[in-house]
Length: 314
Image (cartoon, rainbow, N blue to C red; front, side, top):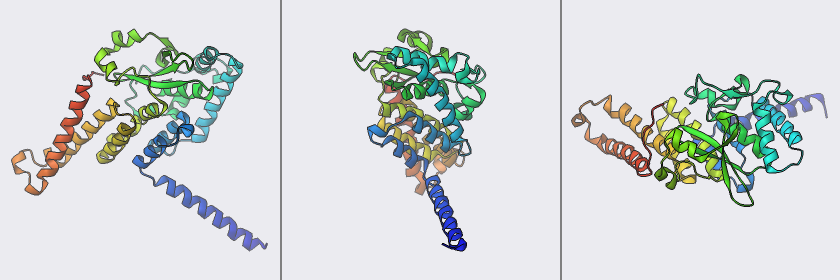
């Protein structure tokens, strides 16, 4: 081939690659979340899900660098566990995250007391957690979950009011234990969630809190950051659409239900309350929209309350 032909082929390769990136980047948050959650069971991955959701929120993040950090932790944990039991693997996953050593470049991960709930949404991203080494009740259990997944452990997420934690379930006897990532990654007593976080038996029975979730349901919990991001951007219709997807795969996802109610409430506020302080002045052509938003807002909160949810002050 001539140099000009080779140059032309290279330009075409670059163009096609750029078009592919543009096409993937144009996928809506709803389509992206659905694609992750609808994957076959064998293709579900906590790591891939988290990186995908984080990329929606912060597309400029260095995903390769985050993956390299996970690789380092998982490789070290594998060496420490040395083909041991599940207990050995759980201990190794905890050690590489929380104990100072070469495995974490002598920079162990700690709880961020300045933003424990991750109110700054970027603090819930893995890239931020790796950079600052300070985490919250979203970033901390998710990293421990991903490292444990790399070790082949049967782990999942679970929730409590304003809280997410990891569970390990013994594949032989089905016994599940809570692992509290915000307290050094150690096992926690179930009663602690009743005593300290106010979980009620009704909430447990309705499966909104302390559940032993499936992998798909756990990934739906991860996607809560996507709905929070959309709400912060004022993209309320999209937040509703994503919440609906999450409820499809995790029907008692109370966070998604509350987001659905809040998003309808924000649409009600921006489209009507701020424009028409007196409801009697709403034009007839808009009244059906007003009634729909009000009805959906009320229905979502009524459903959450029927599950036993009650507001919790942060």
